[in-house]
Each structure stands twice: as structure tokens, then as C-alpha cells.
Length: 353
Image (cartoon, rainbow, N blue to C red; front, side, top):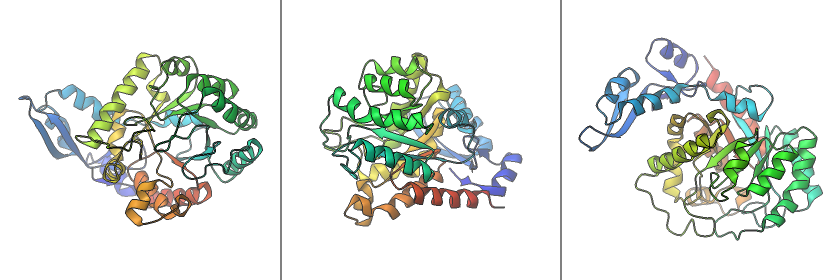
């Protein structure tokens, strides 16, 4: 809470009035404690940065609060270093490449292999740091495809792009697809099920040098939007991702290789999505890089009254910039060139004296 940037952030951090958020351009002056007290009652309180440690002593688990606070300020740039060559010093732009006939925003546009490869090259040329290749739509009510069909769709594209030293991530829930894509040069696994859909997925990622993006999804694509419910969407999604980070670490995947994504639109209402975007900085408490995908999603339609996914650019950029103001390090987008421009202006503004 109380996020600031620029010279003010540096001065206040130096004076102990603020702390850096994930070692980046932003800093926070206050924190919200949501925790059971020693009597077991749930308490919510807001404190200046200098009083957070003292306030932690009144919670049921002071050490857990202190550890979370330490993770909030630790740099998570080692994850970025594993995705592209060398530290970028800015948020990364992940370009969406759906090699599918039925994705919600561009289904069929790049189903042809040659067209998909050409589009991947164009996204990279436009400034995408990473090309996210997916062969199965996970939009609401989507029907799963066979692993054979998915491999047939994505592997020629992954092989071609990685062979040209274009950084590639593989957007899949299936261990066999992950394994083949990593062998072909993919450096990141982006799994909407947070490595839960396929029992072999954890071992495949652990045995590789690939990084992973763990996304939160309530339910499955076929039914996730039927009646999503949370007691507190931010805390519930945070807890679910914390469990997945712990499972990854237990399997041998170091935290520096893990990125978390709250899963906008995946088993969430419009109100849930907006709450997660506005509180995204909370997820730095997991000690991982934070990614988010808001591009062209239907909540923009619900808020702003657009109709077609490709008409949602302005809303996509507004939501993305809000996420950057919360310290997002990776943004997954369809409109790469315009996003790169927006990120450049956002970063320049954050660095202004």
C-alpha cells in the first residue's frame, strides 16, 4: 500500500519511510496486515512501514509475517535473467501466439504453421521479449484437445522460433508438450493449471532448466465461469499460489525459476478481476516474479461496453498499466507494439525526478 516511485521513493527508502517493492522502481510506505491474532480472531490493520515488524508481534505467526515482508522487498530479477539474456531493468512483454482454431480473441488467425511462425517473428521484431506459443484454447467453455493434436500444432512453431534464438515459452497444461517444447528450446513453461493438471508436469519442469509461470484458475476451463466464489479473492488466490510455489520447491524447482499469475478471467467475476489487478502488489509477498494477462479479456467489455475482443486495446492498456503500477514484471499481451510503447512511457515516468 502507499506505492510511490521516482526520486521520492529513493529518498523515502533511504530514510526508512518506505521499502522497495521487489527491488524495483516502486516502493511502499504502508502495509496491510490480514492475519489471525493470538486469540484466533481475524484482524485487518494498516501500518506505516516502520511499524509493520512491531505489529507482526501481535499476530498468531509473527515469523511468517516477517518472512513475507522480507520477500516483498527482495529483488526478483533473477527470474527475468533466466527468460531473456541479461537483466532488462523493465517489465517484460510476452507476446501471445495462439496456434489454435478457437482461441477467444484470434482463434484461427495463426492456425497455419507458416503464418504462426511469421507472426512470432513479427511479435519479436515489434519488441516482445518472449513469445508464448499455445496449442489449446483455455477460454471459458473450451473443449480440451488431445496431447497429439497439441504437439502437432505447437512443435513446428516452437522449433522454428527457438532455432532463430527468439525466446519462447510454451503455454500448456500437459507434461508431454512441456517436455518436447523444452527439448526444442523453450525456456519457460506457462501453465494455467499451475502444474496441477498433469501429474507428471512438476517432474518435467524440475528436471529441466526451464522457468515456470504458475497461474491460478478456479475449476477447469469448461466450467470455471459457472459460479466463481471466494471468501476474499486476493487472500484466497494468494494462498492457492503459495501452495503451488511450495509444491514446486518441494519438487526441486527453485523459487528464482518461479513466476506467479493471479489468472485474470479464469474462474473470476468482473469484481474479482478488478480486485486482483488493484492489489497485484500483494503477490510479491510470495517471493516470485509476478505476471499478469489482461489483454482483450471479457471483463473489459463488462466494464467499458466494448463488443469484439480486438476492439479492447484501450481497456487492455489501461488494465496493464494499473498492473505495472502494482509492480508486475511480465505482461502477456496480443498487441505487442502498442504495449511496448506504453511500457516505455510508463517506465520513463516512474524514473522521472
